Amino acid sequence: MVTSRNLVHLVVCVSVAQSATDILLLEVGYRSGDRAPVVLDLGRHPAPSVDPIVQALALTDVVIGAAVTALLLALTIQVHKRTGTLDPRAVRPERH
Image (cartoon, rainbow, N blue to C red):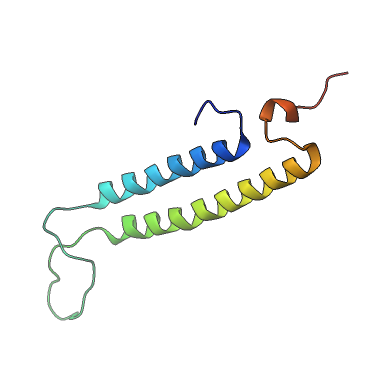
C-alpha cells in the first residue's frame, strides 16, 4: 500500500503511522500494576498510578489524527474533482 500510486492509499498510510504514535505514547505511560489516575480522597496519599499527562497526550493525538485524516481526504476529493485522477504523478504541474 505504501508504494501504491493512489492518494487515498497514501492517506491511509499516514493514518496508520499516526495510530502507531498513539500506541507508542500509551506504552511510554504504562506502569505494570498501577491504577488509573483518579484521586477520590485528597486527605490521604494516593496509590501509585499511571501518568495522566501521557494519557492526555494520546487522546489529543487521536483527535489531531482524525482532523488531519479528514483534511487529507477532503484535499484528495478536490484533487480528483479538478484533475480526474488520484495518481500523484499525474497531478504535478507541467514545466514550461
